Length: 252
Image (cartoon, rainbow, N blue to C red; front, side):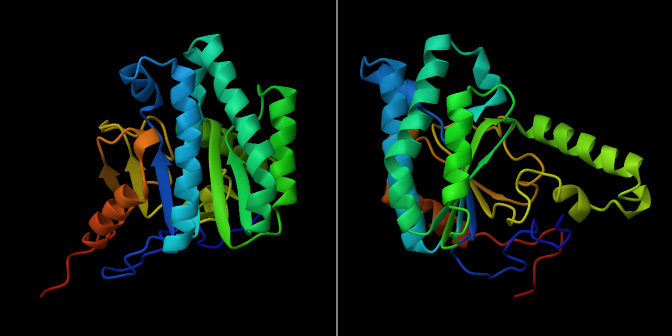
């Protein structure tokens, strides 16, 4: 298991590249987009998938290496069964329709979150997508599905505790980097920029550990309407931030 500092933020000092290596997005507003147009919520989720395709393409062209999107949370099981099934269906459609193209374009797919409880067909498609893109390294698309930040931390803690109990790991050797190596995001940098659409101002249990030093960008734009221009605005805002990571700002 990796114990290097892969989880550290990719910008280690102020004035780093204006293009973040890792962007995370809370894709919010599909339901409101549909309601505003008198459409079923499933129609909003379908348009949300189109926005995801645009964002993956735009992010790659801009120079972003990692994109992590919040697709289905552990709390989303509380939604009506029809909507949950629609979200499952969209993931299936996305993988079946886009996997071949993403594989050719050098995209590596990782699905983070709890696999237990997923329908067998969904779990099988997830494993297929990860297996068929395992050797790609041009762009990393991480889909948080059946994901919750607290659940991830608890799950990582149980695995770490088991290794300590078995003698594989000494408790006094547990560091932040060691703990991060038990998370779903092992071997990828923490997000530099976290974007939330639809005007909300909360994390909603997304990447709680990893976003400790992320820069935040909030927009009232609903996720299905997010386009390259809005993404450029987020990057412009990011480029004007001074990332100090607890240090003091350099004197002018």
